[in-house]
Image (tube, rainbow, N blue to C red):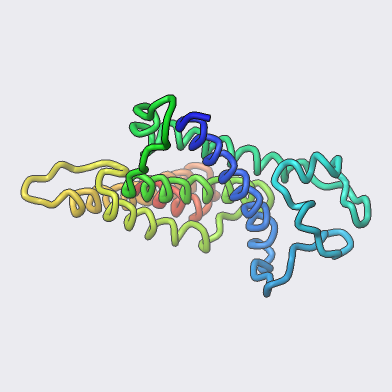
Length: 227
C-alpha cells in the first residue's frame, strides 16, 4: 500500500468512527442525554446495553441486518448513512484539504512521508467543522433546532484555527501585520459578516412574510462558517 492510499484509508476509517460518535450526538444532545456517565450505549427500544461489536461503524448495522440483537427492533438506516457520509467527507477533506499538497507529492512506493504538523492541525480544525455540520444537519431535520452547544464553540474553534494555522480560511493580506493576526482578522470579519447577513435576511423575511423564515441558530451556523 503506498502512502497516498494508506493515509486516504486512514482518513476514511477515522471519519466512519467520528460518524458513529455523531450518531450519539444527534440522538442525545437535543434530548439532554449527552452525558453517558461512563455507561455503554443502550438500545433505544428495550434499554439493553449494546455490545461493542454491534457498534462497529457501518458494518455493525449490516451484520445485524438493520435489527437490534437484543429485541429485534428495527434500527434506522440513518445510522450507517451518517457514518458513511462522514467517512466520505473526511476522505474528500484529506484529498482536497490542508493535506492535499503532501498527498499529491507523496511517493507511490517506499516509506511513508513525515506529515507536516501544521497541515495535520489544519485538517483537524476542518474535520471538526465538517463533523459539526453533519450533526447540525440531522438535528435540524429531526428537531428544527441548531444547538448552541455545537455552533458557539465552533465560532471560537474556527478563530483559534485561523490563529494557529495562518491562511487556513483565508487572508486579508494587510501590510505590517503578522500572518497569524492577518488570518485571525480575516476569520473575525467572516464570522461577523456571516451572522450579520443571515440576521438581515431573517429580519427582511419577517417584514415581508410576517413570520420568521429561519431561526437565530442559522445565523450562528453562518457565523461559525465565517472563520
